[in-house]
Image (cartoon, rainbow, N blue to C red):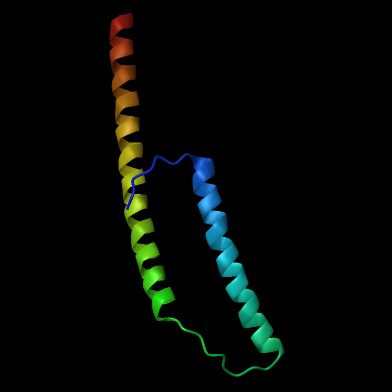
Length: 88
């Protein structure tokens, strides 16, 4: 995997792409219900593997984001302490 720096707008774009896929699947489910289609064959093995990997990726990304936030907060608080000491 390639490590890329993402800003909030880029995260939103990837989120909306994922949401679009989810909406299309929900639409398929609804259409199947409306047409009383009891079953519909799908090749799901790869999709389920990709979903598991996506869930794992998001879990790691959340942990990395939390770490980056904590580091930034710590640096900001340290700078405030140094700044307040200089004012004395």
